[in-house]
Amino acid sequence: MKRLILFLFIIIFIGCKKENNISNQEMKTKTFFDFDEIEYYKIDLSDLDIDRLFTPTAPLKDISKGKITIDLKKELLNNFLIMGYPSKIDEIELNSFLKLAKNHNIKVDEKYFNVLKSNIFIEKECNYDQDMIPSISPIYKDFFIFKKEHKIIGLIKINSTGPFMHMVIGTKKDTRCFGQNGEINYLEKILKIKI
Image (cartoon, rainbow, N blue to C red; front, side, top):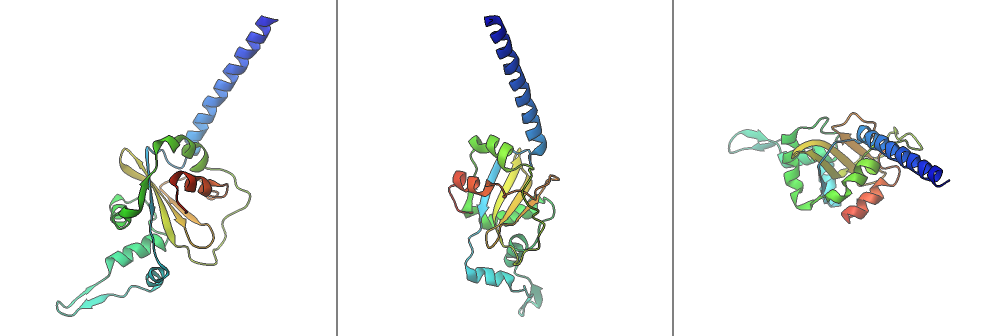
């Protein structure tokens, strides 16, 4: 009888171990990015700053030199915060943008990476289809930058005003359901901030 119980225990243990390996493999295939570093950036803007961003950028004429210039800082902020930009990962453009947000960044502690890879930044099912047309334009003020070996491989932009919307760049995974199952609450807890 003792041998039978020991034998059943070993079989159950091996079965659980095998099932665990499968779930780790599945986790790797469902994760948005294979990262080893995450940085979080928040752009603090007042209502007046937001109004200025929505005002179209007009070229400025420098009378003394006869040249026309554009407010590049405003144009860069406008592209990243309001528009669906960038459409792909361009490290030079991202680094230019991040210089504007450098004083508001948090490096995510590695101790959270397993949970983030297995529960937060993964493909999952959601209860409803998020492919709705928003009633207001999103203003993306929260950004997650994903890196692998110090190279930017992915970006998640989160709308901080109005209804939850997001934009994920750098992955071919289905990201429609990101944020629908409490992920934002968890991110707020580990970062100790309000997204």
